[in-house]
Image 1 (cartoon, rainbow, N blue to C red):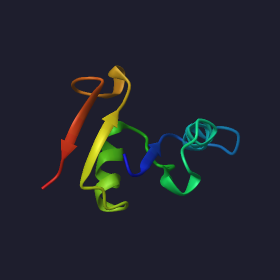
Image 2 (tube, rainbow, N blue to C red):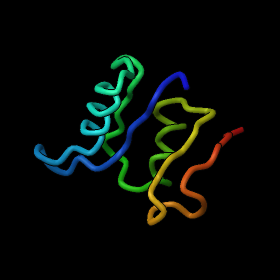
Image 3 (spheres, one colour):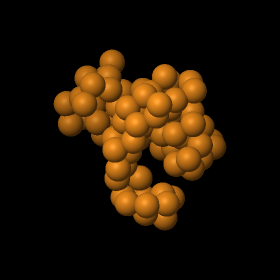
Image 4 (tube, rainbow, N blue to C red):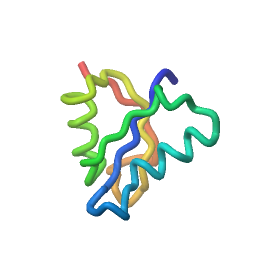
Length: 80
């Protein structure tokens, strides 16, 4: 995996899902320069649209909660 895009809600200064995930990844050894944050990831489908349109993602491994994903817990996605 080349880069990581973490996405989640950041509805207040004290509640920041992407930053929490970024910190955990960096703590586990992922270089900070390889972690990108999407603070407007309110649901998985919106995140996928933003990943392509804003972050330029064309190929990704998607991991999400079952409650927010129509399908398996993770899947390989390719946009043409």
